[in-house]
Image (cartoon, rainbow over all chains, first blue to last red; front, side, top):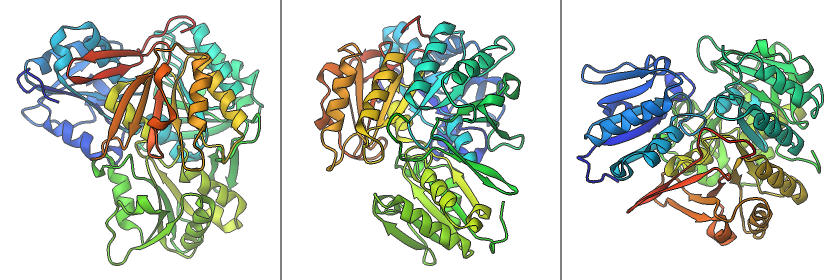
Length: 258
Length: 258
């Protein structure tokens, strides 16, 4: 796909949930080939860069500025990687890069831009528990930085009514302390109190913490910024396994109105 | 997590969308360590097995029987891998294994069962187009083998009304020729005619075929069994790039009622 821009390239690379073993081979190759790597500090800190590779660290909130800087460098002919935790297409850098291309100079549309997928947080957390996303599901960001909170509540209500399991991204932050608690209230109005709620933090990493509680007992303080919250559907089942953690799964079949 | 069952293990392994480069390192290691590999023929055919590894091929429709046979062998102390295309937790084998554990002998609950996540089809297809799943989205299986068709229509309608982008799995098969066409009709009643629809077949493989059409022109014949269909939300944007394929993305921000 290289254009007339001196062989520059921009790859938006999914790092997966954290452990190097959950990185894809193509993502690892793109990281190794990059001359310049852009990203949020904690994601870049996971990587070991070579002496000729340059890290461009930026803050979490500066996604669009980061995308612009990365595109400008690729347009100069550099091999640029923009890193994302998980998958870059899910509440992450791929959309920011597309926004920057659309609003940017015409030449950026001819750049070689590739998105390299990864294992997104909800899949990593689901895998540690069984198969809570084994049937229809929705993924919703609880951040009201980029959309009005009433839109979040409306989507939560419709998704629960539809019988989807839910993966909640960006559940809390220092600036957004109450949104997750309010989301549980919205869901409690629609879903049975025993619906399984999974708090999955740092899945697969040494500091992993996974817990499963009924919706009636779910509280915002059980999550932090690194948590992905999965809420089952009314069909989701919990299988006790004695000393082992329970299996939580949503069956492949669904009954009418389930 | 090994129990008192002679060191047997069952790993449910996500192969990713197809190319070996999109496999995670932990999935590759689990495949290499397996004594017995269970799966649908075309998925097992992707692997090169060693002389001491045994393939147990079964048909697409026999997921529960396959799960039971795999669990029985793990209970005998074998190192078993059950393979899934994409991610095993998304409309795939992880839920079938959990169902078999719940309904099976008590000893199966103490088995060492691990689910190893992978890049699921919608993430691979989305990556090839930009970021169509860059904001809230829902994943829905169109198969009415395992749920009543009215449930599918109801979920499609609610998800579109909520403003989700949609990933449609299992869009068509020889036995289910009309469901996708009917799904487009349901969506056309709610979404603007220019909404982007992506037909993503064999993403990343040599026979990859990705096309983008407006919802008004989307037809069931544009998909086959190996296609994942992504339908944008009203906010999804298409960025023309001259000779290159357009970028399709859903912005990170959403306006009220969008």
